[in-house]
Image (tube, rainbow, N blue to C red; front, side, top):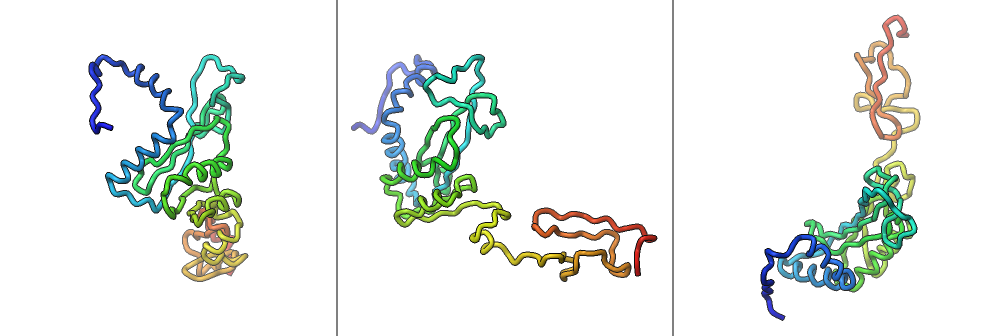
Amino acid sequence: MPEKVVIPDLPNVDVQHCCRAMDFLLEPQEDVEREVFHAVADLFHLEVDLLFFDTTSTYFEMDKWDEEEEDLKALGRSKDSRRDLPQIVIGLAVTRDGIPIRSWVWLGNTSDMSVIPEVKRDLAGWKLGGVVSVIDRGFSSKEDLRILQRTGGHYIAGERLTAGKPEVEEALPPRIPKGFVRFRKTWRRKKWLSAMERPASAMFWSVTLRKPSVMPTPAPSTWKS
């Protein structure tokens, strides 16, 4: 196969012709993406130890839309806050340096929780080695995490601090004792401090460790010694 390709009269080709020609790449898409990635990985000596994966959605502004039409457009959870318009879901896996590995396109009403098995299966033959998959909390169901651990895989998954999962509780620092707040580097009971200790304003951290709430200081006439 020659290393250089010459296309005669290329300036006479319109952009729309190139866009239409891309339809011919749909059938061999997986093979093309795999060969392009391996060529780039060899050229830049990439070491794929982390694999970042996420999805997004893109919508179509259309005057008319037939829901019976057989394509990927569908109403779904829009990440652009446009649930009134048909959309598609796009997935992308990249290296730690942002080099694309492979892309996916799904039906517009596809949920994040349902795509991990397909992603894991599609990348199984790419000889990426023992990569660590990095995902956000939209893919952190027990089933998805179990799938990512198959064949010796590992993962880094985002979670809400208030999820209540054992893994989250183990990773968090010790919780604030119930009924106590942090004040002047010591624990104090959650009640008004004495007039001698009360500053101009007292800052109290909520028990859930979310945001600090400022409790105003009562007027002097309400203080109790």
